Length: 101
Image (cartoon, rainbow, N blue to C red):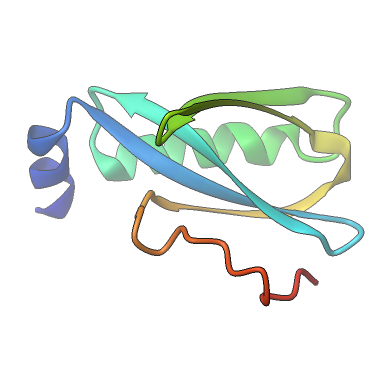
């Protein structure tokens, strides 16, 4: 099973969450899930975020990328959709020519 191999290779799973705001803007953040299978981590996080959508809650995410530390805060009131996937550092390069809708 894929999640078992991911879990055994890494003590901590790194997930990417792409939020879509009511304005159409999209942006990714990272979340770490320790000691869980990929399916369990994605499902638990997805269920939590789905219940927070449209509320006054602010979700926060902190993570290291390369040598920089990031802290992101997302107002769940403006979130209309999100997608969670395993983090893939090779697909994470932002291309300045990409359009954000």
